[in-house]
Image (cartoon, rainbow, N blue to C red; front, side, top):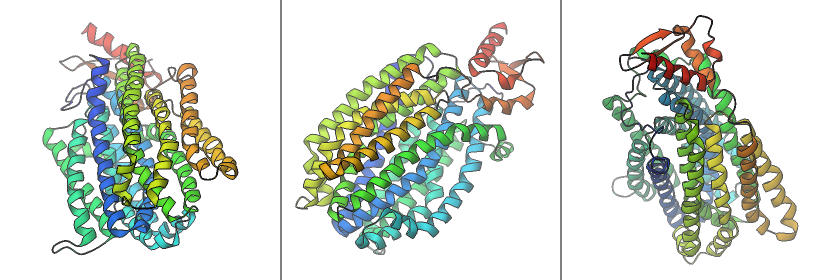
Length: 510
């Protein structure tokens, strides 16, 4: 296979055509995937809350926060891989895509196994640090350990979905998330209640059902990609790419670590907030857990649009189409106002009914949840603004300053607000701290977008060092003919925009 073959199967070229149309065609399946995952989590929460009680629901809230921290690690790693793959797609470089995919898989699988083993051993300590209510501690430990057992499958599934989106394909992840959700929806009540010949496993059954569903979906996705001949698959000779390429891995960690740390910052701030909320009692913790289910839906458009912005900007940078980048960001912000604003409105109108699904309509936790939702949910409009801006900037490898902004917003601002105003506002200080942090993130993110240096420099350029040993040559044209660059040209030092320009010149000269 030539370096510039275009076997993109169901990938989408995001470097041409209507920006608004491309963004919607990419973002809507991503939004659908998020909606299905969140719906699945919500339905599972209904089963747990209604049939196992508020203590069990509080247990899942504590377990899910820790699971989010683990997924945060692969998020940064996966986003770096997505950007590398997107830029290689823009340059029509299949070999670079495969090398990136092999390096990512060859690294994340052993790391996830180590995380799984460590999580099992230290689960009791983690729950103690959270201040998990004593009445929910035993249930939370059972739930959390099953989550850690399933971690290698969960992280690999997440990585593959992100890689597919880097190729411009957001539809395939939607189909396999649908498969996972359907299986989970069938297994969860079956194993919680012990329906038919199945055992009654309670909260363990909820976590086990999710693990089985993800494993089957992962197997189905891998088989489908090989049958389709996806550019992400590795043939027998290409399995050598599973040995991590040093330069690609270095780029992944140097850019992926700050992106993962952004999620870790959010997670650790959430853990601190949860420890404060746990002090308010089991009913408040249960109300907060149910409200989080609503917030997952409110933030879905922002996350889908952020992923779309990253994939589109990465491909356009790879193709040296910088003139389209501002338009991508602008449409992302417009769609965020429309979609996120609509979600906030709908959930504000129907919050009592929706919270009743999780807690029971006569639960004393419902009024608490409604109050939390009204006080805090509006902030997600600003969360969406920040996510679109960060999505654009990270596509060019600009990740350090967004991390700094996130750390400032989560710690001095959000936690400072919560701790500082708690004596005067009581629990309202906890709920208002959420939008306070989101508004601060959006304002500082806009400052970075307008005045930061994210447009300059090399966009994850060390990925190209992997090609340096292949003769410093660029293959172009339908005939895959190639010409050597001048021997004095330092390929490793060329910015990606310069590389793309050289590719087009060689193509025209052919």
